[in-house]
Length: 263
Image (cartoon, rainbow, N blue to C red; front, side, top):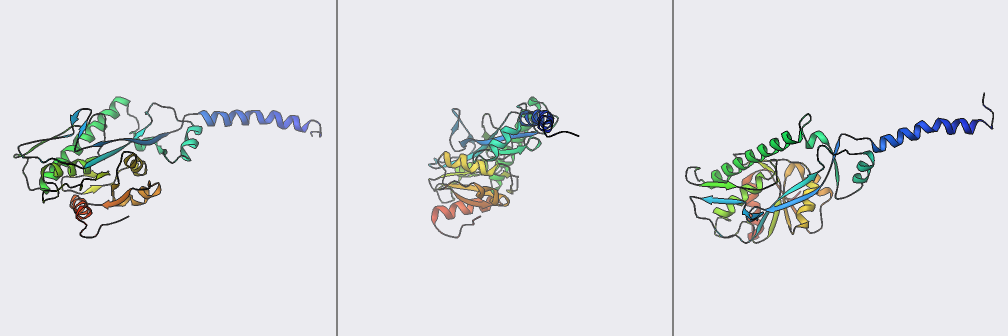
């Protein structure tokens, strides 16, 4: 039995391992990655001095607007993320906490992850070319499209690549810019049949888009809720599920005719 004089000392001694445990938890590495708005690139223009879209075998048109693909930047897979890092990012509007395995496949080295992301980008570019040429009723034996975008991996630029090819070749179908001269941003995967798929990090991508001058953002319809969660002022969301729907929405936005879908 402890006396009144000895009890506080006993509690103080017992608290030392607890403090040590809390300190360890705060600074111990956790299985998370921290993400923030990344770079954007106008697929109708140049990236690092090289045209993003090059077309041969067909006449291309001069464009005046922008179609900006968007990215997020995540901490390196080898970076140690602590509890204090997670708590700090949790309350920041321009940061997101994501399970590391959702950003980087587990069990892979940094080199393997880079190779995986590059392969996904190549598949996305191939699908974008197929979808665009199919939409325009052009054969791959007639037109050759080359897509180059340095230092970006993954499939989420597919929709914007496809729209960029269409704008270079056909515009809005009547000689006008598909963008209507605006800065349009967006995200979404694409398959050869023109189906738009969901991606991750849309709330951060909307911030990157608005930062770089976009006033309209094309978002996969299933991710409307995420896109609205931290939507920057002055940025309009247009949900899309197909390439045809995306083109129709941009034409309606340009001409002022027809209704536009909304999140």
